[in-house]
Length: 338
Image (cartoon, rainbow, N blue to C red; front, side, top):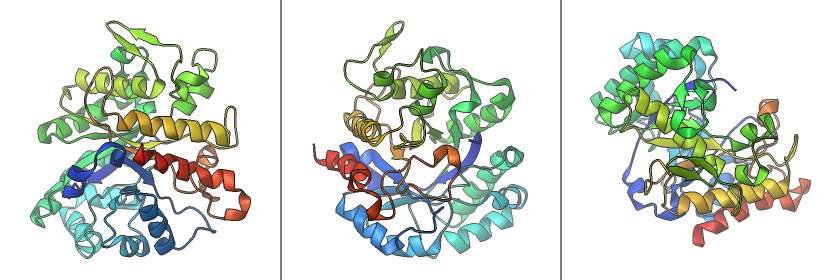
């Protein structure tokens, strides 16, 4: 997975009305040739009390279906947009005018997986988009999404730090976020940590199961890998002046097939435990009592997405491939009402 992607976050009053599991959203990818129409998908989301989604590009048919749905949305830009957005304020103004003002969504974002060659444009693109939104009288927060790979160390969480390769860019981004009280978006996948080091990372710890072996980080104690990964980012942010920067988990999930420990049962277990954890309002050991807005990856097992993520999906686009797979999202969002 690529390391850094810029994201633009537009907050609305909807976020103030989201108790408990309303902090859970879902990624709505479009890399499939057998996906249901957006109107059907949005209807199913409403039936399951999903109130937040994330798009990876400004797909107008999806934005139209979302209009007046009560569902907030992150809307992505494309890789090729980053350079002009960074170099030309007029390009940022035009992007806002073309993609945001006609159907104003609560959230907007840069591409989720840009090539590293685009990362140099992120700080200036963020600034220009922030300026363009303010000029258009759109209340907005501009931030960026990163993966765990920008950290050179994440264990124990208190020693989380940015890698030498990413440190300069992440320090620039963090200073921008801290100056405006904006959050950082982070893609958090305990699954990949588990399969990368199965001898050290217990399965139940990665699945967020009660009774898993605890991990001490004096004076704190971690009972699940999700909290530990999020707090490693908190520590890294604090080390470069971002003590006031909150973490929003922009992607997380568990594959239902395609690799070690990948199964429908484990995906259901992870998703349900995740919702209970995020809905508890307990926060993480390093940031107790702080809500963590979290977006599950993904709505569908898209048949054209990268192989590394091909098994991670909450709902299959075609029902004939098995009811048990479809239950991934049903069980996840039934937890809204616990």
